[in-house]
Length: 165
Image (cartoon, rainbow, N blue to C red; front, side, top):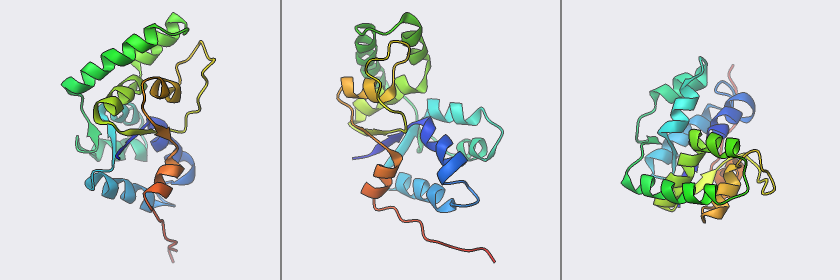
């Protein structure tokens, strides 16, 4: 099983749990796990991350298409399935339009096409009419989701204490 990371995983890590200066091991682990074919994201997430002017934008800029995957024919086919699902739901037109403009829509399509799990901090809200939540879209089309913390535990990630003198 491989994982596709949502933008909020990177943003939250940079702001809170795994700041570059405090926990460089997290960022090194991401690249190591990517090299082992376990952790990826998509080009649309990279584009969102590169919009900033901070360390995260610079980090995202440095990564290649081996980390931030581009779409292909299977992804486009899967996107049609996600689109059909979204249009059959109870969401307001604005919510559907916003979902189609977001990286979330493409994350779901990538996950379907590869059989991978989506990693996000986002929480399900199945009764929402104003926003399509990533976990709800994933569940509706048979894509598994979990938190970054669970992914790290499942993958046996360990960040060892180091002190700068």
